[in-house]
Image (tube, rainbow, N blue to C red; front, side, top):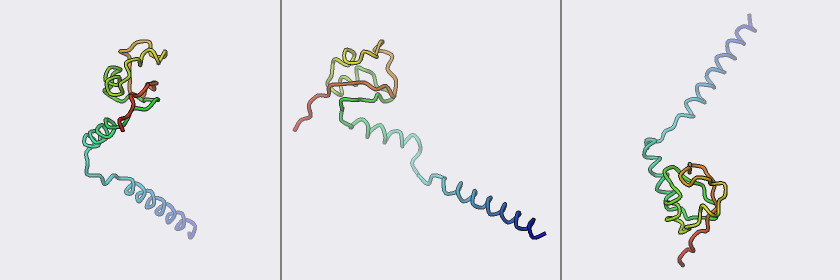
Length: 101
């Protein structure tokens, strides 16, 4: 009889721990997902161009070229067969424009 009571207590503790873990994982952030996306875009927009560049959502080779001052992106990246087929996460090599001091 004592062992069945112990098993019930163990099950109760396991459920309680699981509930606490779930409650602890709930976000307490007041920003909506859309606001978080806007903040992230603004932070990434101001990020300087580096030699290895990861394409972000909404970017084209033209916008990256304008942003980074590199008109030869396609020539430097033989893995880009179609300049219109650019997607977020694509890694490209660029020659960034010199930063003003």
